[in-house]
Length: 94
Image (cartoon, rainbow, N blue to C red):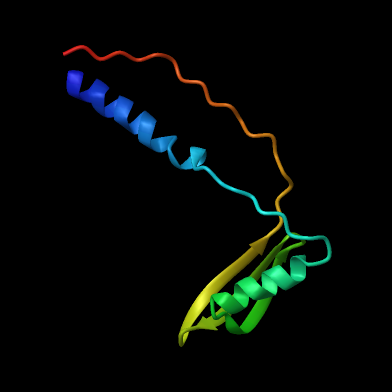
């Protein structure tokens, strides 16, 4: 039983780790967003693409990268207020 509680507490800690990844957002000057997107595609050697507009806010691309077919997705998501997750206290005694 103690093992199950310990395993559960580790899973709770690990599952929340990726959502709390620190990020530093860099400002792109106004009217230069398209240049930055094109630069990103060029830096990643994305060439020779076919497009499919899945929704109004999602563009799917099938492209060549290093002689391999690669999937690229450009998606527009409205910014959401992040949910604050609260965890109840959990103590394990052995």
